[in-house]
Image (tube, rainbow, N blue to C red; front, side, top):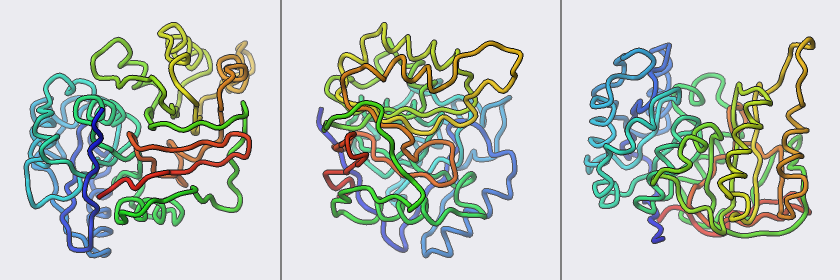
Length: 313
C-alpha cells in the first residue's frame, strides 16, 4: 500500500466543515466552533449542505457526498473536519470518487461513524486520516486542553511526534505483554464490524488495531468481537489498542450479563500478542488524536505508544 501524507495546516489556512453522517442537533455548536477556529487564525468554509436533514442523516446521500467531494476539489481548502458522527457514512462508500481524494490529499478528521470513511480512504487511496476531535462535539466550551494540544501538534507539525505523552492521571494498562510495530488501523468497533467482508476494509495483515465504542452492551461487544475472530482478523494483526468503551455496561442488576472486562479478557487476554487498554481515545472529552495509516509502536509491557513517523508533510 502506498501511503499518502496530507500537507500540514498553517495559520491562515482554510478549514472545511462537513456533515457526512448526522446533523449537529444544536446549530449554535457549529457557530461556536467556527468562532474557535477563526480566533485561532484559521479561515472556515462550511459545506453548502451543512444543516440539512433527511431523517437521522445530514441530508440525502447525494447532498452529503456533494459536500465531501467539493471540499476535496476546492484548492483553497487545506483540511476537512467532520462536524459530528452519528449515522450514515457507510452509505457513501460505493459512491465516492476516490481518484479525486487521491489527487487532492488533505487532512481529514473525525471519529465514531466517520470510521467508515477513514478506513475506505486508507484502503482505496492510502491517505493518512485522523481520528480526532470534531468541531460540533469537541471544539466548543469546555474545550479539553489535553485534546486541543495533542491535536494541533499532530496536524501542524511535520516532525515525528515520538512517544505519546499522557496527562498525569492517565495510564495505559497492559492486558497482554510484548512489543509490536505496524500501521495503525481501526476506530469505532461497530463501524469496523459493518465493513468486514466488503472491499472498503483495509488489509489487517501486520497492522495495529485500535478499537473503541459507545453505548453498546457487553453482549453486543461480544458478538462483534466474535465476528472479528471468525473472520480471522485477530490472527492477522500484530497488536491491539483498546480505547475507551463509553457507557458499554449493563446497569440493570436484574439482567444476567458478563462484564465488559470479562468480554475483553475472553478475546484478548490470551491472544499472545501485545494488548493494551484504557488508551485515551474514543467518545471521551480528553482524547488523543490518532493517525490512521501511520506507523506506530506499542510497548505493552511498559504501557507506551510511539508515533514513529511524521504524519503530515
